[in-house]
Length: 298
Ligand code: FPP
Ligand code: MG
Image 1 (spheres, rainbow, N blue to C red):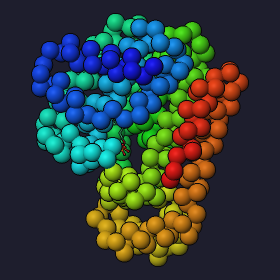
Image 2 (tube, protein in one colour):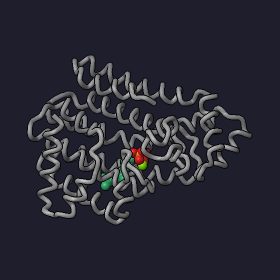
Image 3 (cartoon, rainbow, N blue to C red):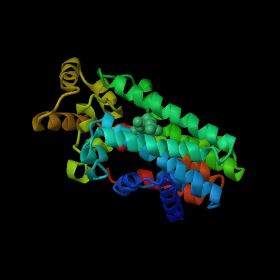
Image 4 (cartoon, rainbow, N blue to C red):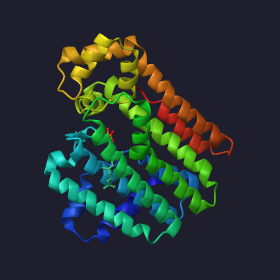
């Protein structure tokens, strides 16, 4: 059923009537289309639903194009990022084009759906700015981290589920909670994978987040569990290119203090809550999507 979404995105790109944009779009890896999957699983496959899913995926792709420029990322989904291939200017403009086309198409859905999605895009942008600001110093505050990942990642999944509930006359609050929990867990696991997966499997350099100044949940827990000498050492490595010895020390400390497991368990609680909500509604496909998230190798 996702192919209908792919075709709709392709149609939106063709509408732009620009060969360069079509060629650039063709270079973008599609990813898991998690947001589209959520929308279709909640609301079915009517034209309006497929269009909404296509719009959300275009906005998401735009946000990743900008994110890779902001994060200086050379790779995305194990392939060279668009900024690496064609430079920052092209990546930013393709992002703007996908984003503005998405917002334009949103006006053809409904005011309610347009409002919920565009509000989430605002949150995404606020969250990304917070991510950038936080990375300038060592953040050891968990609630600040959680608020940032809610805005940066969970808000669009929450809004996707909410829009789908609106389109299908389902209970908006329950589905939005499901989307928010999934989004929070998704980002927590993405942050864990940056630590636990080797760079080849990950398709991007490992421990890149910390080198970029991001203190994700395992770093926050690690800091909490350390004595003051260790804390000082960890802080001194923050935001720097790490040699293999420093990388090994961080990883060893993380396993010693069991913070990887602690962060994963926290993501798991959110996913289990989401599963319970959907099981109560007989939404087995949605429970399955949530389950798959915590069954990933990490
Ligand atoms: C990935 O985070 C980034 C996001 C989920 C949101 C990015 C949002 C913006 C750039 C603002 C919105 C912009 C537009 C054009 C709609 P990450 O760097 O932690 O994850 P990664 O490992 O996938 O890079
Ligand atoms: Mg990034």
